[in-house]
Length: 507
Image 1 (tube, helix red, strand yellow):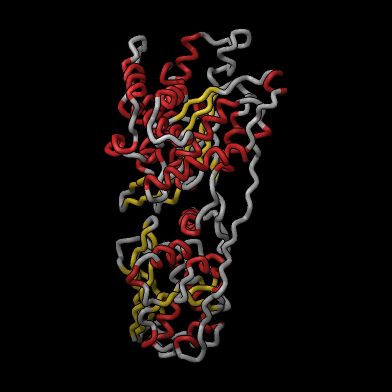
Image 2 (cartoon, helix red, strand yellow; image 1 turned 135 degrees about the vertical axis):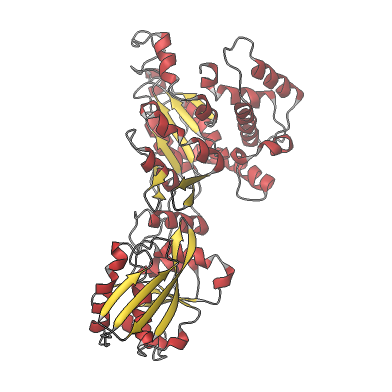
């Protein structure tokens, strides 16, 4: 008596085929699961035994061996409960073995035989749904997962309440339903309005550039100048997630075990880890690596408050994902890759006491200020497109009537977004322009070229610009020109881009 079913696990966000082989032979009664199972998989024996009995089926008093192949990959979680139970029932003739072809079964079993969802279900089904070879497969899943999975609009996803429902389906006694509802709804997120922030006109204009071209940004200023509130208001400048983006983001959060099985993420994330975060928590880790804060901020914002208080080795982890928009986590057995296409918004004080250059309040020497800012390495600073100083709050700024609101800033961004959509013919932004595309998309006037050359040579500067910072200036200028509805980059656009990188003059 032998039965083999097909199942899938995950390696990062990629599906990994697992064959569930069930063999029942005469001999002393035993129930063994082999194939490198972890403790939660080994415990499936008791769940399967009880669910079969409580579903009014006979559990065989024989020697049962379950093999999860390939044997060199560790199996985790409760996703194999339903395939193991069905393998036993098909082997004993209770369920029709001829109907399991082109079917995939997923579900954790309760002791009474009912089906429960599990955290990996949504990303597994999404990964398989994207592959054409599974168009003819039917996926049997718990009803509990319906609210998440209906957004895939796949009629081959069938929902079952219990083990007996699945057995009756295989025996052609009932038909399992597929959902006709789409539970995906865009909830309106509430963010602070920029009008609540008094003054900071220069910083708000820089945020318009950052939101339009998806540029990373560093805010430098004294305590209480509005850096944190500016960052928390920033997500309001972005359009809502598309259905495909919501699905991918929900996959990541499901793998990180940060969602219930009925939730679907419909809002762009803003992740704000504390400065004591470990490198593993930022990048992701574990024996079977889970996504870290870098991936949880995918398609949203990673806000690092008090940037220079973070451990320097932790910050250096950001260098690769800021460039490649992915993070690769290597372990002895395997390597996984997670998407990390986020906008970095960071804030810091200008000096240890926080009040430089106000010499009446600042107690730091110039060398101490420079030493403090040098905690941020040059290569990481190069990857941050915009460095903007926020101004101390004054009575004049409190009483000023010139105050940009979120609506004003969103309206300013629209023309720049339309120009980028027309330019790239896809969902790309100026920040993603590669070095080979610079000459094509960043055409300069002669005056702009002259100003850029003078900035690059900077005879009075102790440091020379890198090629990366040179490209950042050009991409920033391209975004600023788009906001001004200009095809060519003029000297005013270059000048504004240079002013947006104030730390280039210090570090």
